[in-house]
Length: 183
Image 1 (spheres, rainbow, N blue to C red):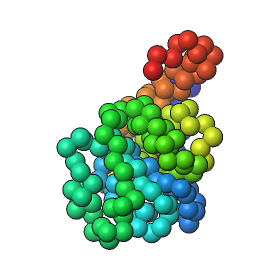
Image 2 (cartoon, helix red, strand yellow; image 1 turned 180 degrees about the vertical axis):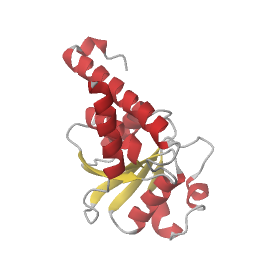
Image 3 (tube, rainbow, N blue to C red; image 1 turned 135 degrees about the vertical axis):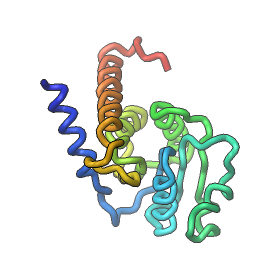
């Protein structure tokens, strides 16, 4: 019963998710790959001077920055010098690790996190675990066709809710017993 109510609450929070503090500027924007709207949103935010840097985590090793922005309809010359691609992440957990390394290397204190609305809760949880003192502004993106009346919405929120719960439980157990952490 509690699990089912939690899933409904999670689904409602996914539907209601909106970008936080749209006018705020941060040191950097971090995009977790997984959809073209995520990358384009990050590039748009950078072009609008919402941050000094853009880090895109989880990019295929064959993709170069010039190729990535070729698919975007903005000022390429403005964003290219401020863009860094991360090639090592292949999961949400490794996105957080890869991002944490880049944040530390570049002395970043505030980030606007761009990912899909259904992915934001787990991404935030992992990012805050990796970089607890980071000021994080959520910027969820709604994938095309991702509404509650569409077929893909319920299976995907079901899957993501369970992943969120498992991540939360794992992190809670690690907090209580750090020897369980096998990074």
